[in-house]
Image 1: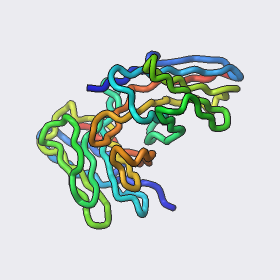
Image 2: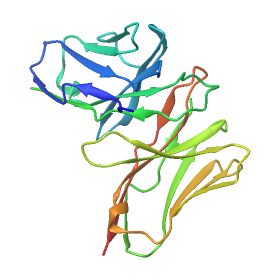
Image 3: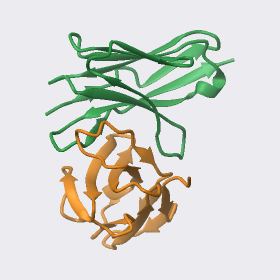
Image 4: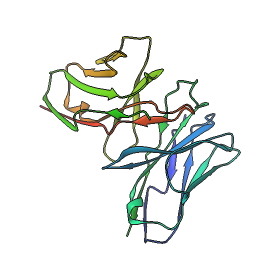
Length: 116
Length: 112
């Protein structure tokens, strides 16, 4: 079974631009979560999508948004990029997600975003 | 809100010794706690999940304990090898909606 894939792997943008990152979950997985990882803050939860609906959201500004398609693939978008948005963006998939599932999450390799 | 602390940013040990990593949380006891391994430039990889009613769980050279009284989980790697060098993250349920929150990780270096 193929793992979680993320594209692109590396991205360089300038302040004020916007960016769209893509995540393809493991086949059959319907929950996709997005995380931002920085050396100072560690892994921070952005949002989770299940069946094309945002089910959960972390404490990030509205510049960070996402969506999920009917095939469970997900995209996240960051508008009006700031220098502090430079980070590794990780997506993770699981079968159903949610608090009762007690499932493990399968992470992709991440997209390394550098904002200049 | 729930907070996680992994006490050591870095841990250096000699090959063959047992590595012990600590994860503490501050508020309510979570239903379960997970440990992940992350290598440089890669996403975290799941290692073990331990539930609140389990005191200990083992997988090959790995052992995890969960003490809800101390609000602490310990992660042990016995007979450590240089290939075990990586960052280890603990994670638990941070909110009612089911999102995981992660500690900042402990970077383990095993020297030959």
